[in-house]
Image (cartoon, rainbow, N blue to C red; front, side, top):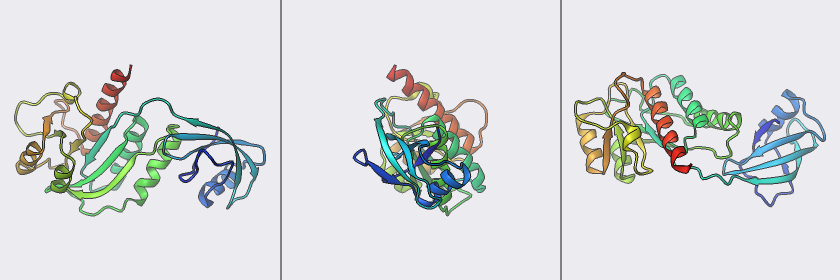
Length: 234
């Protein structure tokens, strides 16, 4: 069944008009017509079974027939990551992390960051598309670029994955809290950044013996957090 994004629909709605973009996709691209059924996701944990009553390429109207609230608990999976110079790699990370189950993505600016500015509009579209494709009812929260120092001082407690020498537990075995996982740029975190994170209750961890690119490390951390959370739910 085709899936569409409707961020402002509520469980009390009996009818709803799709956005111009989603209307065009439904009626012009997919050629859906009256009485066809579609599913709407509001990105906040609710899905809606709807029937098209007025097909229109700019304002497609649907009737809400059933409302479903997702009953499964959603574990917090927060990845705070330094954006890469090539944004295609960040978009790949955002797409795959959404499919796995990430709930929060924060972009952090580090000393060795290759990118100091990020327009989040494109990443938001990637998250929405991945949410629909994976049939998730919850849209990950994307936080705009924030300095590393400001973030760790605001969000105290979590994990910092770095490549500096020292004894560090494997992330999967270290997870005990819902705190964010910090993933640095290609040049890694500086010693000062690591010290600042430790001062704010971050636990140093490692992601294995292989050297990973930033987006791969972020996805690997997301996968480990998701696996641990799913085991705890069971």
